[in-house]
Amino acid sequence: MYTLNICHLYPDLLNLYGDRGNIIALRKRAEWRGINVNVTNLSLGDQFTPEAYDIVFLGGGQDYEQEILQEDVLVRKGSFIREAIEQDKIFLCICGGYQLLGKYYKTWEGKQINYLGALNLWTTGGRKRMIGNTVYELDFLKSDSCDGKIVGFENHSGRTYLGPEVKPLGKVIKGYGNNGEDLSEGAMYKNVFCSYSHGSLLPKNPTFTDYLITLALKQKYSDFVSLFKLDDELENLAHDTIIKRVAGKY
Image (cartoon, rainbow, N blue to C red; front, side, top):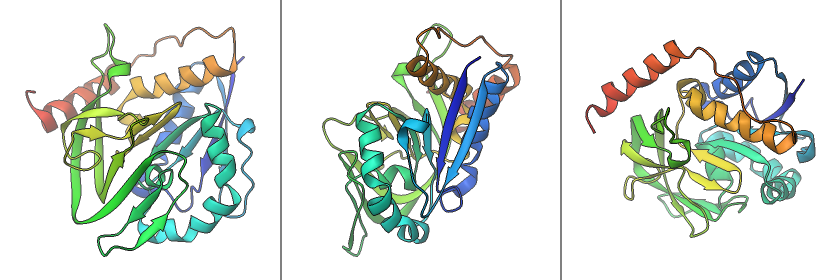
């Protein structure tokens, strides 16, 4: 029997707009297939040991929460997070957690807050918030049975820009995405997947959830091939209804 070990970093501080639902989706879609799942919550002062986990999750938080955890994430856990990323550990990071992996956040008043620098990306604050439902397209999810379209909800004033070695997670069909300018949404680097989508991302997009589970199991077990299909009729109906409601004909 296969086992997945998931690390939820700062669940008490980074859980904006129900981001914990991403952990629930990973757990349930694995367990429905007979896969054991262990979830470990780590917060301020806890030691992060990357090799103990198969998937690491960072949710979203406001500036206040990010300031609270800044010293802990930079000093106590920072080197381990950077090392884990370079060693191809799977990360899913949402909004504030996404920004934390970058080089810095510069407020619209000009104050710069240095972050982990694990990914070559940076964020600048704006006066206008970018809020609403969003639809974007992930090329790596496209197949005969999946069009690669993802639905989510964004609410951020930060505008994120990517360095040359960091790829966008997806292309915006409806919404703002990273910065409201270049139609990019989120970021990908090695096995790190970042997004501005709350709401939560994975429960609304079961194909993406299964992609992450599959990636983790293939990385851990040499004999793992693929997940068997679940009855996702209701999930797919909800997903497609949101796309039609938000994006209409595109």
